Image 1 (cartoon, rainbow, N blue to C red):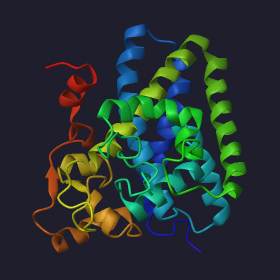
Image 2 (image 1 turned 60 degrees about the vertical axis):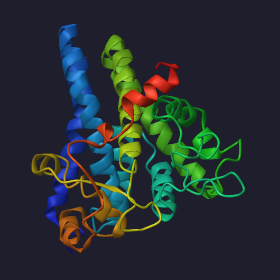
Image 3 (image 1 turned 90 degrees about the horizontal axis):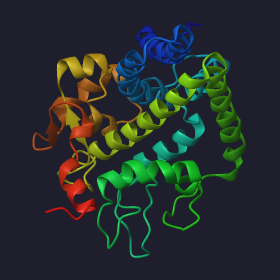
Image 4 (image 1 turned 90 degrees about the vertical axis):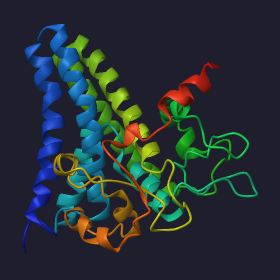
Length: 288
């Protein structure tokens, strides 16, 4: 039996995650000048978002290993690296694929727990900045997952809570290890981690903003086809293709491109910039 279930190219997913794991320990240990904390920290924010959407995300759809034990160990590993419980994201993401950023129904609730309509008012989408920043607060408070205000029809299976709790403790242990090496860098890394979670929310928003037809499975997402972008991000720009066939391995997503309608939403660059950054900022602060 071979080690990799699909292709040895999945080694890239492991390497990305390893770099993200070791870099905070290294920075905490060498304790460089503060300007290097900031410079490397900016890179870390973007890189953590990348790891969330490659090393963790792709494994959800296509397990890396043939061995169930190795897959489970890897899930604990990427949980530690990204600071996101794997099985929490697994539920959010699989439900997202089922309902795809749906709008509120007649009952005033959505089905997709990460839909940007969920916490919007009067049937409108939520403000971009609110979704990204207030969304982080909701995640930490458990509002997004446990839904105390009953804004989402989809509910997580209570049987999954115990494993999510274990994964959360793994995150705490990893953060504690950084603090043990360098307390002040540990505080700085908390900022890096939270900014990466905000950045991931921004990416999620941009993947479905201004799509051609949210109800058409071939037109309900956004594509970004820059060669350098998709080389570095392991085909993460083939998001429409991914929604058409979520079970297709990331290495083969480009095979679907020619089968899609040409009038689908296509952008250049990263998804976080396919968002109403400035307009929603003005709206948030009542600026003209």
